[in-house]
Amino acid sequence: MSDAAVMNVDEKTGKKLAHKWFEDVMALLMGTSLVSFGVLFLKQLGMITGGTAGLSLFLHYKLHVEFGTVFFSGKFAFLLPGHSPDGMAVHA
Image (cartoon, rainbow, N blue to C red):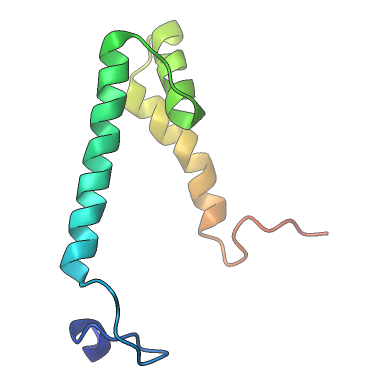
């Protein structure tokens, strides 16, 4: 880890960052937990939401496939192009 990250300073601009790394980690964990509980409650009630989670719940109900497997495979389709150097840019 660089000295700038330890000192809570942006390496490029030299400006002080708004949050410490610990605050970012806690926010990520809290956000992930809240979304997970929301999907868990929807699954227990037999309800469906929109987006990838809703499609995964729908396929879970109809095809009796594990929710996590369907959700991961649905998200994985967007993960690979997102990590390419161009992102999901369209080439003409």
